[in-house]
Image 1 (cartoon, rainbow, N blue to C red):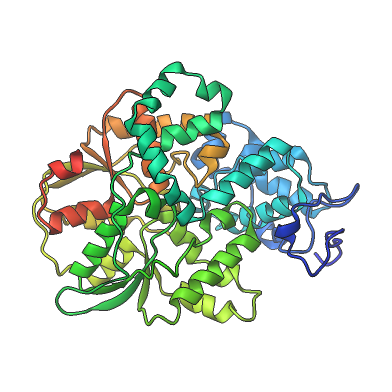
Image 2 (cartoon, rainbow, N blue to C red):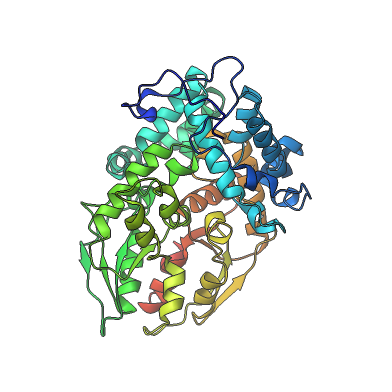
Length: 459
């Protein structure tokens, strides 16, 4: 791509993400030479169509350009010199990044790399309409910052407890006037106690490993009970758990999955600095989207001479929680937990990380748990990071579809491994008038190890 002109009008001393996007000039090709989608990866696609039935946007609309192979065709046009049009950007934006197509592809096409590289080109080189820019600016000024999210807990708890939320929903005005705000309102979980975890949780019995634990952003602010359960189970299984709450921030997953590469790199450097010299054997993640981003730190920081080697080494220690627990094997006794569970494969766990059997193995090992599978597990629930906030109407359709499939299992409990999925499916169940409790995989193990009554989970 050396024959493609570099982006114009930016001083080299100022980071591109600080100045904001500058659109290519008239006649310029869609992509510059800063990590464009790679032609050899584009050429791997033979347009066979195996990806089509697994792609949520193709399932919704049946539009070729809203399928993986259609988007790859657009990328090829960009590499061949076609301009970055609003239409091309719209089709790229509509991709959920669920990576179901990566699992389905018989040719091994790295669509994950292609869409990530294309999105960072779009974010730098396309100027969106003012309202859309404002929405995205607000989203990314809030969600990757756990301390800012925590400030919302009090007002949100008061809003839920006062009855104002029920009143707002009864009017039906919010979806018509502000669909993105309506989406946030429908997704917000019930706010309980904050429940901070100490900086270090010692292993019970013989220490088998020392692990760092990512507390996350949305997870830390709105699902602190999941982090607390994670620390308890790891300790019960012989792990010293380091949390370092004052040192860790966002992992950068939301940023990198939405093309904000420079921002994601800053977050990644911060997390590497916090943990790579902490003496840990593993870095444990209990949120699927975060885990997939962390495992790719070596690629994200490959061009940074000060961090490339450190980032690759750190990424090698990253494990999804279920991976590590299966790898270590159980030592803490499991007590009976008579409950039927529908397990939902979070996309960035099943497709991006290839972790499918381990969560099921952990659940089946709990006496009394009956595991039920959900129809069409490869179709995304519509959460996809902040996609459901940016695209509320199609996200709602996908959420309702997934909720119907979950309710059809007749299970007492929906279990998954990602906070976004928990919120998205719970919202869909409410819209359908159903009733179903949602929980993280680790909460099942925690209840079993602590011999808690099943009613604690179903409240």
